[in-house]
Structure formats: structure tokens, C-alpha cells
Image (cartoon, rainbow, N blue to C red; front, side):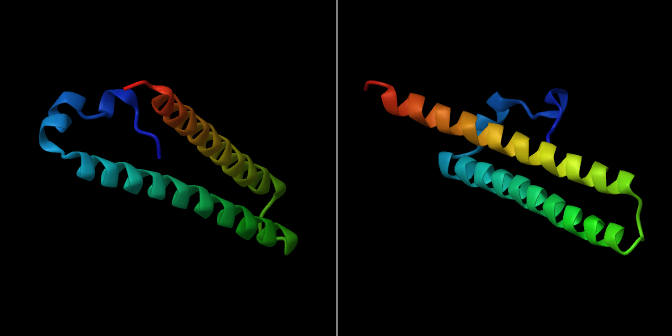
Length: 95
């Protein structure tokens, strides 16, 4: 879900080729993919929990799945908070 910094494309090269509308669409697509990943992890927790209840998996897998989903949700909340802070900062700028 997260790209290591060394693998990010050159931002200056991208700015020359992408229009603002395309950049917005790309960012929206990235966010949708990330949120879909969090939702998939939540579904996985429910599935693993059900499997645990019928004795198909051990408690370690349940704890691992729950922790991964919790971390993903926490990261998503932090990204949301940073986006909101950036938006508020832009709105405070004087033109």
C-alpha cells in the first residue's frame, strides 16, 4: 500500500506531463485503493475470527489479522488528519 521513498517517481518529471485534473484523479484513485485495502483487511479479520470460532485457525492468526487491520486503520486516520490540516492551512492563506 505504501511506496518506499526511493521508488517514488521524479515529481518534477511528473509535473511536466500531468495536468491538474489528471493529478487530482490519480490522487483520488490512490486514496480509493488505500481505503479499499483497509476495508479488505477488516473483512479478513471477520473471516479469520469466524474460522477461529469453528476451530480452523489458532489465536495467533486472529491476533495478527486484527493487529494488521488496526495499524492500517490508524495509518488511514493519520493520513486523513494530515489532509484536513493541509486543506485548513490552504484555506487560511491570503491571496
